[in-house]
Image (cartoon, rainbow, N blue to C red; front, side, top):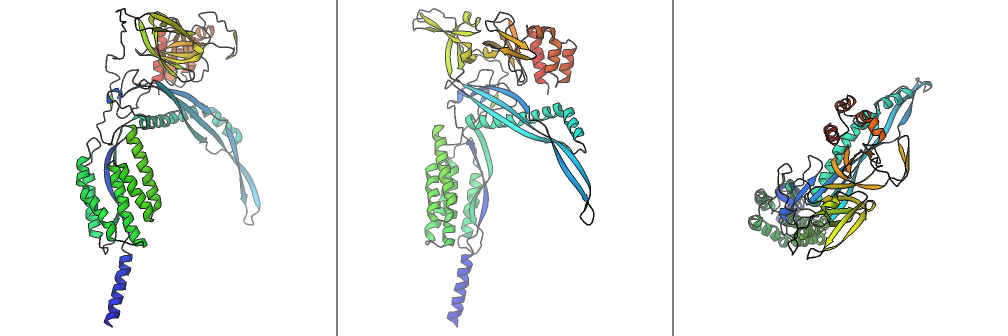
Length: 530
């Protein structure tokens, strides 16, 4: 009888033990720096310039153009699909199911899509890149009882609807650009409170108390982690916790599911601890142990991926830690001397009147060139670049046609772009004629000085004498010396700024003149209008 009672008690204890390997997620906090995919390793060279506000790259200083990363943002416009009118049939039936009346309702539907681009010139690598971003949203009107009313409603409101969607698209695209730039180049401080380890949930398990003691100790240690402080002390304090989870594994031999589950908790917790101590080889070791333990292989494979990714990131950034000082600042409004502007002197002490510039070709190649100051004044259909030997003797000049060039960015901030337009200040060898608002024939490429650019409008200067206006809606630029522009000056400006009533009214009232100073004011007024 006593043996039977002992057997029953032992069986109950085994059943209790079998149910005591339930695990709970227990949270802890960590802090570190998310490192970039394309780092600029020299902290002193982490500067950027950009032509839109309210955007920062973490760990960088925003400066006047050009920074070591010079970013040009262009909003390429919003397109509207053809509106469709959806018809819906409504039937009214009697109690016998017979249709006694039929009616119809109508809704207007349209789709709006916007696109923007950023162009990045990296003066550290002498490379440039371009990336496009897009956003689209749909519109569904309220319900109308007449197709004609639905059509009229959309027609009356279509411009306002387009403006509303454009504003929303811009906001979303700018967030996407910010995420992209920070992912590629930024050093982002992270404070995460949602990480977890697996801790025993059953009080009857022999390891329950020690599991919780180890977790509480680990939680309090990680809470002291700072993204800008070394982890040496954290690592040292965690050694007893690591030793405990490692010690649990050999105390529970066998391959039963409850045993593998307990071992899985130790392997998982150790892999996670080592991940935040920036030790990818140890993460890989315990990721493999999770797989070999055969309780949850997917977590093991995930930690193998984490280990490889962390190892690659640390290698690319030439560091062994994700903990460092991060300085993010905006000094773009602070007067400063550009240390990149140098006066070149030859070995014979002959001063060469040269300016350095980055030339971006149509193939998106970036070339560092030198241009004599007198040649800058003649930049138009081509560019003359200059080469000297070590003794300051002129080797020669090379002309590059404007049609092969996209942009020319001088180190001192002078900026040229390839703009297509028909010049009114000189006779063009390219014949063209205008039919309505469409220019037929060939429009030659020209390099123009950038006076002002925003997502709404650009103002450029050709050969230091002819102003050119470009908007997202205009395929080619318009010369302000052209007959149509001169005679329709106020009307054209009012139409361009139609979504900015104050500026548009000022243009109608002849508040602007066809001069560089006045057109610059118009561009700034129009661009700052929300």
